[in-house]
Amino acid sequence: MSKESISREIHSFEIKSTDLPMVALIVKTSNLVELNAEFDSRFAGMPGFFDDDGVVIDLSKIQDGAQAGMVSAFETALEFSALISMLRIHKLRPVAVRGGSEKQTAAAISSGLLHTPSLHPRMNADLKVGNAGASFLQQPVNAEAHAGALIVDRQLRCGQQVYARGRDLVVMAMVNPGAEVIADGHIHIYAPLRGKAIAGAKGDEKARIFALNMSPELISIAGIYCTGDASLPQSIFGQSAQISLISNEEGGKLVASRISQKMLP
Image (cartoon, rainbow, N blue to C red; front, side):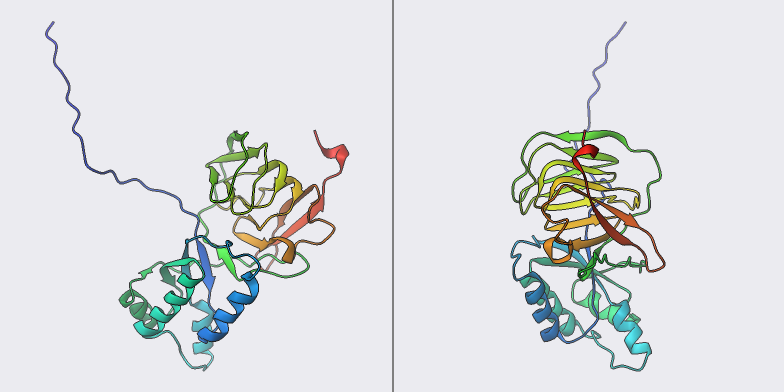
């Protein structure tokens, strides 16, 4: 029997699909001075809150105002360039625009942004105190059962990210400020949570976040989120707690509750 060698063609690159969590900034004013001032006031105490995160600029609220007879805005590339520069100062990287008029979309494209189809933005979470000004870009809901959990034994430091794609995430050590844990299912943290935790990343509204010390910079379930101590009740912050999502007519609301010692394994 003759033998033939099989040569493998080597390519210089590959193209694969990927799911990337991004932020959707819903702009409600064309006053960049006002917008910049509110960014400063909201995130002054969290200089590392954004870390070159990709952002989609949502103009649906601006467009609603224009239809109501208000002065239109962001119809020139110059206006978008100013907005892009402001967002980059705050460590956000504008990637695309959605929800605008044809003229606004054309101006955005001229400034180097992509155009993405409008999605129905989810309402921001309100945990009795306040809400955040952005929402995570949604992916279609994955109704399939999650695979076995991804278990992380090491401490996660600032700048590190773990994503449990298609399953739950279990972290056995501290999630430090600036670190990020993401799961398509539940997130269990048997240690302090002091970074960002994003559960139900592909839209699973039944996902939950559990932590022995709930002290996050940000928590999110299925795109609805809030920021740490600015939104969590004082009775929850720093305690053993769980976060769940309750759907309502406005899109949904995050609910926080204590975990008693009897509930722990």
